[in-house]
Length: 429
Ligand code: C5P
Image (cartoon, rainbow, N blue to C red; front, side):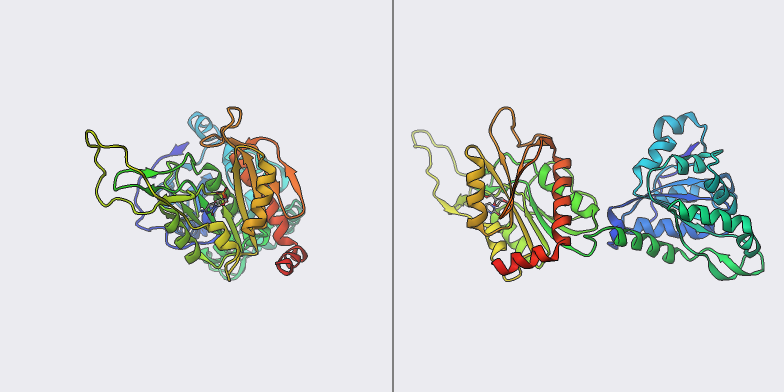
């Protein structure tokens, strides 16, 4: 059954940023007195902006209420395998597919035994068997139960199956006994989840600045010169970098799409403002200039709205060149170790793009043809690009802008892993 009590304001604004801010976690709470600590864990996740869905087993429901879980996670809580409503809204398969990590805390001896033997008699155990995502468990039980050969055998099986086990602490138990079996505190579990992503994300300690969208250059207080950029490609790259744990600053012109989750977003209008926001955000390890920056601006925008008067000829606008942000970043004393530009051309794409790479001093150019009916690019969901580095040219198949972003981020991961590559780049400059 879905229990919707999620319209509660828990009064905590998202305050902290963490590698978990961009992550989605499925928390399974099984039966055990330690379940109260899981409420605090949900609160810590939500404080950093982590997306949390919760499954509560029948045993778990004896210790914490669906109401508390739902209020803290700000989502319905899932309890029943056989609920038609749950299955139509969010079945056990989708619950596991949506998560980046599944955490079972507390993991009771019963649920551990079921997991080790593939038993699926409720929503939690079925979701765990159906999952294709990493699983972390925090066993919590009486010291005798923990020490039993059956429990240790089951844990050994789970270890061999690749399940991450957070060792229980030693100490006083709720039952009055002392020994091994206490669930670690919520802060320790939070840290274990953070460490999981940090250890599995090669870019976790890196920072990036991404520009996206158009710039608007004013003619007068109501008119501007802009372009057709939707920001979809730049925003997708910022989102994918954030998913790899990169600390991303997105500097975006006016767009109608939402800011990606877990990214620090700075909204600007003009090229000059974009340059200022970008240089203020330096130093960074990676720069991706996906914005369609206007090359020129009106030299002196009118302070008042320009009026159309009968008999007068149309006004002439005098333009001046905008700063080139990509070239500025490429030659900056705090130059990122990887600087990537974009080249949207209407003809002779590859030659123009190669020339641009040299002229602007960046490391890679993502080139594409624009203006053709078959590939409008601006505003479209798909993109067909060529990645040009100083030594290679790769034609990528047409793909969604999200997939292009994923492919580019995979390339960035490979590149930043290769320290030799970076060294030869820095000595070549
Ligand atoms: O010279 P062009 O505008 O074709 O170059 C495109 C690349 O340069 C893109 O990566 C774009 O974000 C960047 N650019 C810039 N500042 C400008 C013009 C372009 O950063 N003023």
